[in-house]
Image 1 (cartoon, rainbow, N blue to C red):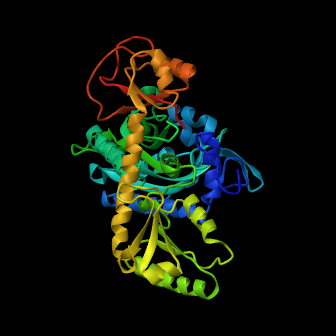
Image 2: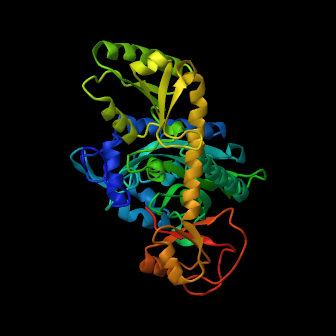
Image 3: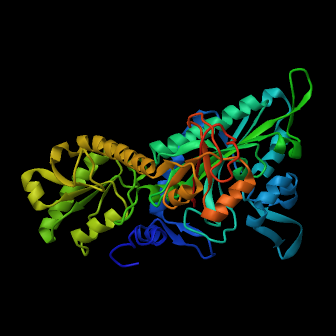
Length: 482
């Protein structure tokens, strides 16, 4: 990594990403392999995402709770498919307080089991349903090939866990969560995700049905950015989550779980970033606007004072603004490059010539149709114009990412063309639905089924790999993934 910038995406996308998350001051590497320290700038992105999603969760009637980090190993073993699916990723505590434990404790990889235990205690009657819980927490899944935000041994997320009287109500909840994640990805992250169902081979361990949102990164790979699961009565059977119906008969509850993590930040980075660094959507940018006063000594003091006045006026419009006025040892050019690297949507330069002309020089992080490169705006109009400029930039990023995704997605009907397509994008293909066929496709091309699109048109055909009839009544999106 050079002092001036990062490795170009076209040269090595992985190196570009690994360098950028450090250079942009989002994270630092933790002391244990695979862990990360989320720095204040990166954590503020998470806080903005968290606040919006938490509001949606509460508005839909869910209550936040906190459950233990340590889970008895026996809890996981009650749902066989669940423990088998997570076994390679588990971190297990066997010694505590200087003594060997009678029962090993698993460090929370997800909370279906421990929450199921308490749902069984708290639910007696149909009047207790639905039970709608959410937890903001950290989880641990041991990663062999870690990458900051995308796959770390410890990460932050929210996990919703709900219990319902029947399948229909549980499925409504499952789809509500999927829709909420889709909205958050599009409206905050400006990521045009494709929502839909996972194939049986890609389901969450212990789930009856798994739904996902998949985004395309700028290298053509897919990123699973949030999942929602209908668990049926699998965990209710394992943990005896039962209720008395209106006739006094005992019934098993139907449960769901759904989660979105700090992986979404990685998605934002890889959807919008370029060779100059981060490109942050305004709604997730810690600083939506940065003002850089220009000048030395007396002139510098004067432009800094005027920059602070302008910053106060911009802040009064509800805009997150930062005035970079306390680092006189750094040149304006250095600051411009730094804030480009850190992805600030709008930079305002304020020098003596600008003040004498009654203008401010405004630079967007990327040129848009509404504004190409730098432009000068009357100083007194800057605060009132900025909300529209930021909203336009947010919309521009979503449209740009959508166009990129569509340009790199194609319908494919033969396997030779399939291999070429997934080398740098997504293939929409017919698939037989067999896990064995998925495994063969992965072995040959490294591509996996990402999603059965909810909005995909109904059609049928022969599996792109084996020629058997398609199983889903529509095309499935395949691609390489993170």
